[in-house]
Length: 78
Image 1 (cartoon, rainbow, N blue to C red):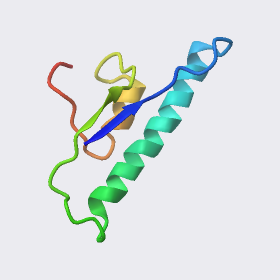
Image 2 (image 1 turned 90 degrees about the vertical axis):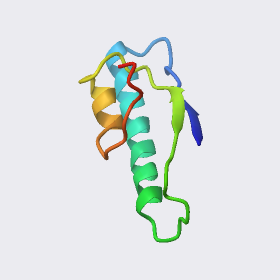
Image 3 (image 1 turned 60 degrees about the horizontal axis):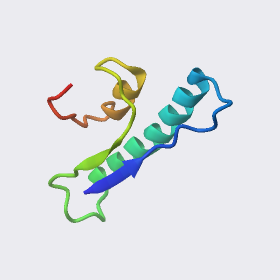
Image 4 (image 1 turned 180 degrees about the vertical axis):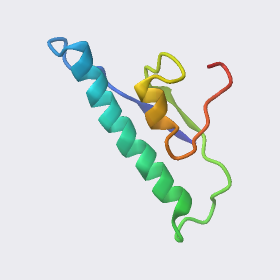
């Protein structure tokens, strides 16, 4: 299980800058999860649960597309 929280950044940043910052951080997280899932050195590859506030608004949102790019699935609430 992995719990995460992404900061909004500074108040002075535009919404686009905030979203791009979160997208970059989320992209790194998703790539790390994929590395763990495919690593020969990780023994338990059965299931990883990732919890957090990702500020994803809807299916098809750029942040949603980022988190699901390697096959991660979201809760059915979306």
